[in-house]
Length: 188
Image (cartoon, rainbow, N blue to C red; front, side, top):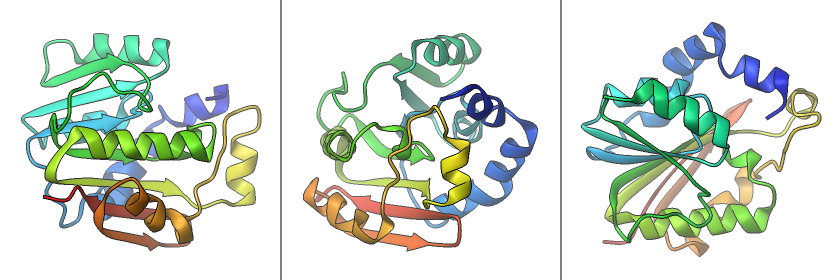
């Protein structure tokens, strides 16, 4: 992430938006279970909001500095932070009751790697487990915000088919003016 993006993703206004708007919309009616994986937490604002709802939360973060800072901050809590690549996760099959991806898919540097990530999520979530998340809809504002940053926008119109190709069923994708949320299940 570029410096502006890092600053915004740590800001109080973004925390408030996540708490009051994004998280309620994404998690409304979703049962993730109590052993959840968060993919790409960045600085961990979403981790803070998730951990109070769960018995166990594992966060996998590819950026070494972000992972180290989050690991230190979560020391002694119910959160385990793993520095790693979500396209080749170091977890066994069916290791988690549910998985979340919150505003991070557009940071994966290619559609092929995004699809590998989806396949890995399907592998590590237990049969019947849910994968839920949200990502931004492409806009000029989004593009400007990501100058000198990775931006591979996900097309919500085709994302459901991509989830199904990764092995998920019961797929739903819902779009609003700025973002889309998704839900999918690993077949039971």
